[in-house]
Image 1: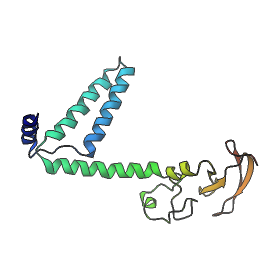
Image 2 (image 1 turned 60 degrees about the vertical axis):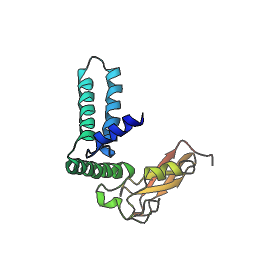
Image 3 (image 1 turned 90 degrees about the vertical axis):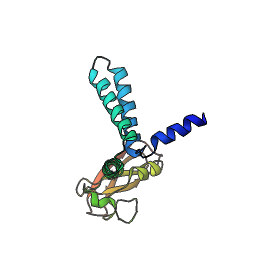
Image 4 (image 1 turned 120 degrees about the vertical axis):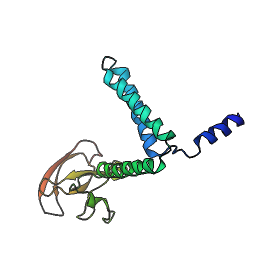
Length: 168
C-alpha cells in the first residue's frame, strides 16, 4: 500500500490537484446523475454529467496550475456574489449593500435587510414583513392574527396577517 501511495504522489507532483471548483463540479455531477435517474429518456443529463466529470478530472491532473488557479478564483468570485445575493432578503439589489452595514437584523437603512440566517434564527419569536411603499424589511412579533404595522422608515401603515405564531 505504501508503494502505491509513493507512486501516486510521484505521479501527482506538479499537477494542480483539487480545489473548490473541483468540489462544485462533483456536486453538479451528482445532481446531474440524480436527474438522469428520473429522466432516463432525456440523454442530455447523461451527456452533461459525463462532460462535467471529465472537466473535473482534467482540472485535477492538469499541469497548468496558473490557469487552473485563475479559473478557481473566477469561480470563487462568482460564488461569493451568488451567496451574497441569496443570503440577503429584501435588499435593494446592488452588491454594494452586502458589505458594511451595521449588522442589525431589523432592516435599517444601511443594513441591506435581514439575512436568511437572521430570519431562521428569529423564526419562533419574530416575523419579517416588507413595507409595500419603501420595501424596507420590518421585524414584528410573531403573534397570530391580523395586525396593523407602521413602517419606521417611511411611516406607511399596512396590514399584516400572521398565521403561525403564539396566541395573543
